Each structure stands twice: as C-alpha cells, then as structure tokens.
Amino acid sequence: MKIGTIEITGRAALAPMAGVTDAATRRVCQRFGAAYTVTEMISARAMEFGDKKTLALASVEHDLGPVFIQIFGDDAACMALAARKLEELGPAGFDLNMGCPVPKVAGNGAGSALMKEPEKCAQIVRAVKEAVSVPVTVKMRAGWDSSHKNAVEVAKLCEQAGADAICVHGRTREEMYRGHADWDIIRQVKEAVKVPVIGNGDVVGAQSARNMLMETGCDMVMVGRGALGNPWVFREINAYLTDSCTIIPPPGINERLVTMRRHLGRMAELKGESRAMREARKHAGWYLHGLRGAAEFRRRAGQLCTLDDLDKLIADVYQANCEEESL
Image 1 (cartoon, rainbow, N blue to C red):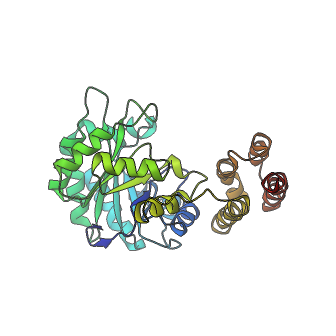
Image 2: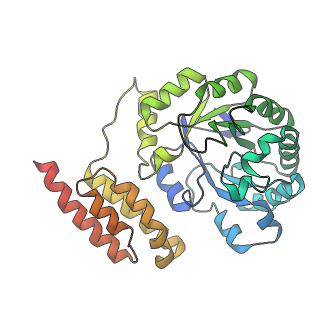
Image 3: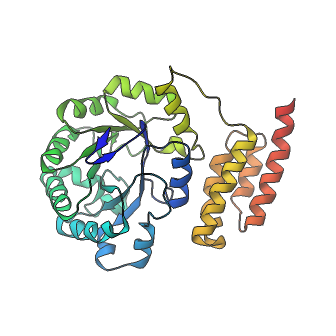
C-alpha cells in the first residue's frame, strides 16, 4: 500500500498517543513490525512561537521506519506554517489531528472539535498540503456525538482537499474511549473515498485486526492501547495476516523483560535517566500486566527513579516468573 508516495509494508500502524509514543516507544514497535508510526501531538501554535520542547518532541532522527509527525490546531495558516517548519526534520509525512477528545484540545476548537466544522477541516488539509512536499493524512473520529456522526462527510471533504489517507477512530468525541468502537462508520468511510483508509478502535491483537479488515474493508488497522506494553502485537498481526492465520504465542518472560529493559533504557539515553524513569513508570506497569506478582511489581514500577531501580525490579520479576514457567 502507498500513502501518497510512501510505500507502506505491513497492515498495522502505531497510533499517536500523547505522553506515550515518544521516539523510544516508536522504535520498539518498529522493531516488531509496525508498518508506520506517528509522533505524539505537536502543537502548531507552540511551533509558531518556536518552542524548543515542542521541536524536540517532533524529532524523528532515531526512528527506524516511516514516521508521520502529528500536528494539532484550529487555524489553517498556523498549521501550514508548523508543517513547513517541521518538514526540515525529515518525517515521512504529516498527520492532522481531528480526533483528540481531551478538553484542553477539543475545548479550544482543535482535535475532535474540528468535526463540527467540516469546511474548516478541508481548509486545514488544503493549507498543509500546499505547504509541504510529503504526504498528508488525517486522523478523525466518527463524529462529535451520537447525533452527529459525520465522518463520511468530513472524509470526503478532506480527500477533495488533498488528503493522502484517512484514519477513522470508530468512537465519537462524546464516547471518549468508552464502550465499543463503531466499525460500521469505518466501512462507510472506506466506501465513500478512494484514498487509503486506516481503521482504529478496539484492535488489540491479530484476530481483532483481521476482523476489522474483513468487516470494514479498510486498508490497514491502527493499534493504540493494544500496543501498551505489548509491542509484539505488530509481529502477531503481521504473521496472522500473511501466513495463513498463524498464531504466534505471546512472548516468554525472557523476551518480555529484555524488551522492556531495552525500551526503557533507550528512553534514558534520549531523555536523561531522571526524566525517563518518571515517564517509564507507566510503561513498566503495562509490560508487567498479567505476570505473577504483578500487583506488587507494578506498585514498585510506580516508584522507579533510576536504572538501578529498574534492573532490581526486572531481576525480581524474572525470579518470580521463571520459577512458574519451569513448573
């Protein structure tokens, strides 16, 4: 599949998640087969004022595969200016956020609030498309609420404005992340546009990925929460879809802990140990989910301050769980 001029290998991408999909997280998911990844949200307004922290957040120099920079805002000119500046970093393309439901974004007219103004969505796409030389995608929700599921209308306008692909999360802004995603709205968007459509919402493994592809006809799936502490999900999806529904068993304790250490160690290399360990606490908790003694180990994960703390935790987790595997 191609998104604009970019060749995409694989059927599952990593969704952008604020505070989660930093360079280290994207890299580990890329190693396990994510077809492409997307950065955390980048504020177009912050870029307009030259914020250095925002620029650092958008860095893609450590990525292994195609990575799109996601930008958010509610002004077409500002979004275009931000994209023009960020193109110097070398992303594969840009993703325009029209789906974030959190109040500090949607409450200021950006993110999913744009779904209430379809023409503005098109204006933003057109402005960014004219400003850059790389592909431009859009990530949207089903609509603002259950009475206004207008993803088809917005998708068609965005396609006409030049969008190279459309990603649809099958929930409304009102639903946030509750309940079940409406895959039928993804099917409707796929039938309404000619550009690639990526489905998002409730894809947590190989079989749910296949089910979404079969039920909606979408070209790819995008995995968000299903990848938290579980970068192997991309390996599993790729194997299931390309090798006669082969089911790869979950990783053993060795692979799980080695991957976690590599991931969180990379965070420390990129951000410094103190900051990285604070941010690593949630990642460690996700990796440890379902293991023997998980409750106590996750409590300790929530107190990580140094790499030594992490190594001691890993040693104890291994001891507790390798004994169980040997029984």
